[in-house]
Length: 252
Image 1 (cartoon, rainbow, N blue to C red):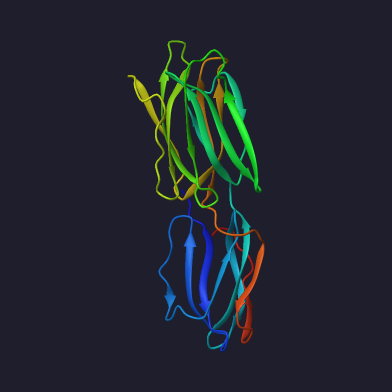
Image 2: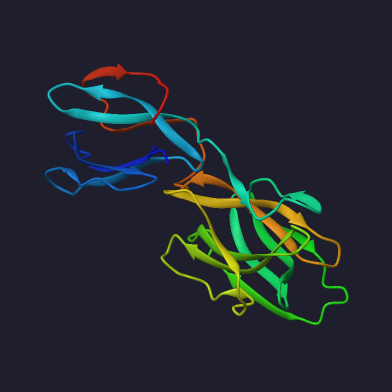
């Protein structure tokens, strides 16, 4: 699990041009407020799906302005859970997940993800409801203010060596836990977790059998999203003092 600097918030005084406070946020934690007075004009340096790699600004006796350089956050492909047999599928990554739906009896026969793609809804469905008399269940997220952060699931092993996912439970960035989607009964189930600390799950891949079940499930993760898109944010604060530009460096 890696930690990345995602944003900096602060206040500056418009009259003197002096930055009064700063607070740093990473994909894992938020720092204490550094400074002496949370008054004045508030500013924020942050870009969605990007991390801060350097700073620029002005300073004399005080810090007068601050800007930042960004680079794209790394996308991580989490290892799938369950045997990767049958028909393979891969949704790739999106901005976030809006809704998850499943159709199930003893196993999850069909799974559907409703993603956000730059403000447009994209739906991906895997498996089949044909010849299955089962139940439907869904979990709706409060996107864009809520993200999937982890999935806890169970699968069972068949005599053929294949696996069948029986249930999934989702946790979110708001601390919510979904109802269990799928079959909560049965013995000899293997539990699994898809999670990357400080990250949101923004896409899925896996495999399904024909008219059988969802055999495996994996995920794509990004460090927890922040704000709007950009590559370099202009310095916030006053415009007096000595210019400083550290450029960008590797790492957060």
